Image 1 (tube, rainbow, N blue to C red):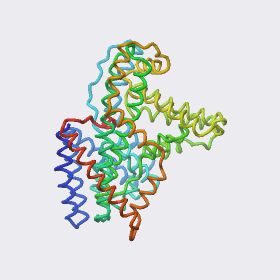
Image 2 (image 1 turned 135 degrees about the horizontal axis):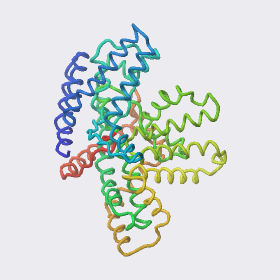
Image 3 (image 1 turned 90 degrees about the vertical axis):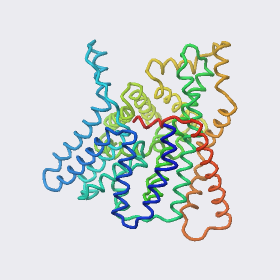
Image 4 (image 1 turned 180 degrees about the horizontal axis):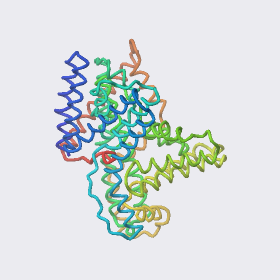
Length: 472
């Protein structure tokens, strides 16, 4: 995995980018990106690249058929086929295991390898065919453009989930210039640093703690593991999103933001407006609103929200831990709306409450089983029987390097949105920059170059963990 990451950084991406920049024809550029994307996916999943192409062709064909025949029937077939493919590869083993457990049967559990990123490219395909049905986009006659949209390698295997209507114009016509390339590269390096330097460091500690027998932990050790994983998953996933957005920008595509400082939220409802924004907006647009949203009374609204949170949890994986995690967030979201006193509490208390709920929730998300998660959470709040062994284990995790990176991680995820917005405004500003703004930009580019060198050194030393969301 380390070797393949270095190949991507030093060979694959530079070659594809240079070829893309050198070719003036948009048709040739698109064909180049399709070939590169299929090669990229086949490098990790040589068997399932055909499944992804089949998925793209199925939705391309259904979108075309909507122009000539029964639109609703075609949409039903398309949705059923997409959900069916996703269910077979992602949930069949889980379903059979559950039936065996409940009915005390011994049905053979299918051992199907999960295709990388199947949840992401399936949801993109679904959004395309649904938008065609709604008349929000025209059915694309050129299969290559649909295949490029679904297979585009920067965001293929871990998002963000992109809607066809958001990049349709850029598939047909886009430009690449020095400024966009520089800004995209800097964003990519920022995401790479999040992953290699911060997320991987947090992962080492989180993995050590969660592999430990829960009974041998105390409250300190449990909190160290919970906080480490909370930081790991944010920097891991937001890092990949930054890399995808940066790479896309270098090729002339502009993806929407996927994270907006979610750990600065004051409520769980606000957290989901800032966390994995592309998934939240997908469920809102294609599930919540079609179910009736909040237009059919409080009871129906509550049912709709529970359904969305259940599906959100299930989308993340075939395990009851993910389902309970989704329902857990749904319960707190429902509680916040039912109890009006939340709006009157000081922001500091609300921030502590939200951070605590999110951190505990990620323990459920990370645990292998629900039993492990409940025991772990119990240790966090009741594990005050300290032993020499448990304290020694906790101290071993708190190395100087971990503590420094943890401090950086906490500051980095703080809600300093005004700084981020200011930097973006400067980056996107047209015309001449002031001397001060130019100086800031130079500092940022120098820092990015230093971070890139540091990441390459860390990768060369074998410091790599796969992205968490690759398995979704």
